[in-house]
Structure formats: C-alpha cells, structure tokens
Length: 110
View 1 (cartoon, one colour):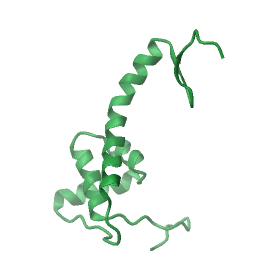
View 2 (spheres, rainbow, N blue to C red; view 1 turned 60 degrees about the vertical axis):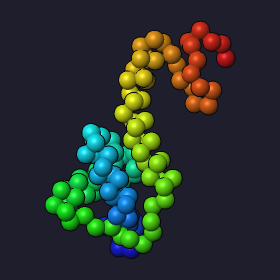
View 3 (tube, helix red, strand yellow; view 1 turned 45 degrees about the vertical axis):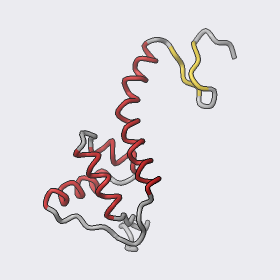
View 4 (cartoon, rainbow, N blue to C red; view 1 turned 30 degrees about the vertical axis):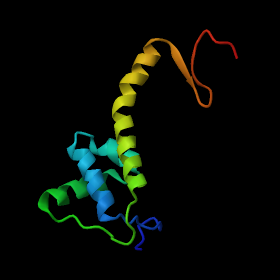
C-alpha cells in the first residue's frame, strides 16, 4: 500500500465498494455527505464518480465487500437523508437528545 504525504497509508477500496458509493451519489445523495458516511475523502469519491461516467473505474480487488458492509453503507446513506428533517422537527418541538438515554422532553428531571 502506498503512503500519503503525511505518512499515513492510503486506503484501498474494492470495485464493489466504489460502485456502491457511486450508486449512492447517482441516486441523489451528495458527494460530501456520501464520502463522510463511507469514510472516504470527498475528492476521492468525486474521482470515482467521474471515472465511472467514463467507464474507467477500477478497484483494488484484494478483498471483496460483504453483503453486510454493502447494506451498512446503504443504510448509513439513507439515514443521512432522513435524519436532518427529523432532527429539525424534534428540536423545534423542544425535544432534547441525550447520548445514551434516548430522546426526552425538557420537562424530564435528571
């Protein structure tokens, strides 16, 4: 695996992973949001989309992506689309989110 300028190893992604990421973008998900969800640099995902449109997208091919990983990527993308309106509605209704306790009303005592 090659190194980046900062000394960290570059990520290697399978063709299946890249194709799923491109599918999410072509399905309407924005590149920055999809990149953040999948944990890849935004520029990298943009390159994959561009290469896919030219028919030149290739993968590392060293390790296949499991069905579970594909499903997790799809669910993360879906959640990122539906969560903002839900969160805005909850905040406007005065609902507070607590990390491990779940949602609770501001009237709840602690």
